[in-house]
Each structure stands twice: as structure tokens, then as C-alpha cells.
Length: 271
Image (tube, rainbow, N blue to C red):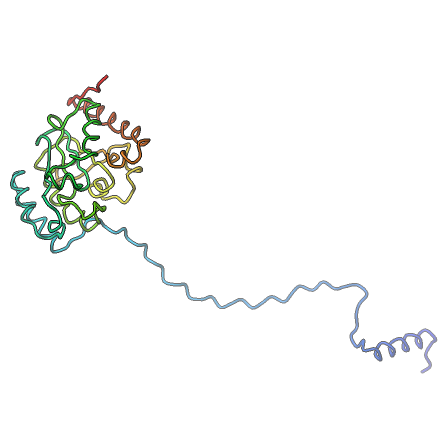
């Protein structure tokens, strides 16, 4: 079969392209092709759901803690409670302290102030809040017409000074908490003032800082049938290091004064 001149030209062009290595047909316009979908991966088995970590309780049951609870429950008077705490041998703090620091002020007073632990001066004299922070505490309460000789009863979470005035541990707080709760029950205050983070966290069973806890009233369960209102506030030792925070402490004192006035206790601020 004879080829036309145009067909001869196309055939010659094809032979030239093959000779040059062009062995694939290319169209004049590109063809859009969807990319081949990658095979779906085999779903992996989901990991077992992690259980949310439960908050670490501040109150832990230990043999020494059970002994402390038994001694505290057996005390029917403040004098008996002091003797029970002196008898308690479950804490090494008593071996490094000079004195057991029990309380000061008036038993049966309407307001019970609870601090964290004795300092060096308190350990030496056997009374709470008698050093520089105690002097500031007296001036603070005097500003709203209150005194440890009339309206205040004062104690600490720990009755013994920690070595070097270090912060009490959670275990130490939990260990002495039965004594503190029994102390409150026997002293029968109407309101609690929790001075500092240790007292506030221990009695409120909270891990919030004192700056988050202060400024409002909380509740503390003393016995199954008794709940007291508690006001966390800044510790006087903290105020000595941070004088600017005294305005927050003053606001807390005014809140305490309003509560006392509303409850008919009464304490007038000095002019």
C-alpha cells in the first residue's frame, strides 16, 4: 500500500523520535488524574483509658495516726488533751523540741486562732505566737478591739517546733490533726481564724494556696454534728516579710469583725 507524502513525513518523524529515545506517547494537553488513594491504615487498638489520678489526701491512716486519734478522743478536758499530747510518742519532733506548745489566751473565747507550728521563741517559752509574729498578731487583733486576754484562744497545728523552723510536712499535719480537731471541740469557739497556709490546708483539706483560700468564709467539720465557720488569713510571719500584703490581712480582719457583729459577739475597731 502506497503512503501519501503526509504519512511518509509522520512516519519519518516517529522513527526519529524512537531513535532519540522518546518511546512514550505524550498528549498535547495534560490529563488530570486523581492520585491513587493510599490504603487506609489498620486502626490500632486504643490504649486503655488512664484513670484520673485521685488527689492525695492530707489525712492518712497510719498506726501512729490511729494512736493519736485514740488519745485525742479519750481527752474530756483541755488539761487531759494537753497530757495526752505530751504522752504521744508517735512523732520525732518531740525529741528535737524544747517544750510542748499547747495554747494561749482564754479557753472558751469566741475566736480560736490556729497557726502552723512554734518558732524558736515559742519553743523556748512554751506558748504560741510570742515572738515577732505574735506581737504583730496582737496589734492586728487590737485594731478591731480584740485581745488574747479576752476574745482570743490561740494554738497551732503542730505542738512541737520543726527543726530549723521548716514548714511542716503533710504527714506531720495529718498526724496531729486529731489533736487539733479535739482541741477545737473542747475549746468551743464560735469562729476559727486559720493563720497561714499550713493551718488552712490542714483543716480545710485543700491544696489551694493561702492567697486563693483567704478572703471568704469556709466550713470546718469538728464533729459529725458540728460545723464551724473558718476564715483563712495570711500568717503574721509572712506579713513581716511582705508588708504590702497587710492590706489583705486588714480586709480579712474587717470580715471577721462584721461576722462577729452580725452574730452578736461585737468587737469595735479602734479609731
